[in-house]
Image (cartoon, rainbow, N blue to C red):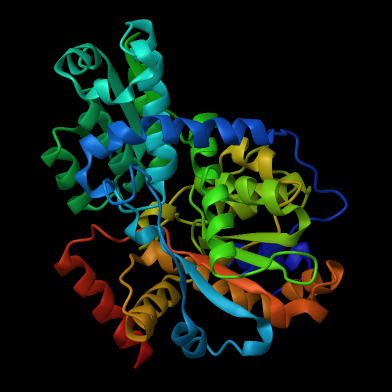
Length: 439
């Protein structure tokens, strides 16, 4: 993979895998968020836990907590050809996250809960602080006067639609042309209005935002600019810290933590990276994974480093001649979130791009090695460890951060972001394609 920024840009233009590393002298976050803000999101999830158990019986076993397991995947590490000298490979299994079946259940549910809390307080529905009473007919009648809307390629729409409709809100999801049909059907089955748009993700968001502005009782969840979404994702930090401790995985200067997260507009990986950075500081190294045709976050980072002269301030992948077409529908985003970029710019370890064929190979490899079923976009992170270890830019990053002497004690976590609710016949097609590529 290329090392200089000019070479990286050329690889991006040619839709070839590229690796960009951050944390340089000229990388500074322009928006600083305090740990107290993340803690507020953690506390909101705790307050709503009794209500969530009522609305979603599958959460009773976890006392209303929306969380996923941290899994050791030694067979997958071997299948990927990653030596034990690089450390241990793990999976943060958000592909089986309750309620919405993807990482979007974190941010999407949080924002709906925050809005519901505001509406409930305005109408005096939280007397005594008992959040379980928001499942009452009285509360649902109040919520029914309000609408929650969002623009989405799929998974965010699922999380928003499912949560909003469960509370009694009117829910509308504006979906782009690349959204999967089964996701639209699942939303409609929940009573969610699905508005289909012929354009891409950005156009669906713009259309949804414009319609919401005409209705004072409509709350629009804006994935590009929402601090509530980002903090909901960041709330995953404390739980992962606890899980690492349970598995006796130390994180410090001599035991680095590497995290590889699929990236669409950037809100979910940005929030996760923020939450982990606040706990582990320089000892966590978060890398975002993007399709070769939709590298919006890498483009945003390069633009911020002045490596893309002559382009707009927040450039689109279309400006590089790319088509934003990928089988990883949740990652098919042309322009990154400026909010997420501003938050992570100072501590993001890097971004790498992946070809669609690699997504399917790794999807099949994970099922074969570990029996885990994910969707193509959720497989993006599995290219990260090898890209880090074998690319010129990755090696340069490890040397700059003085990490090479400590790699055997490293923990590598691939964040599998979705897949639980993929229909069996759809997954069978994914698996068949992946196995054919492996043959």
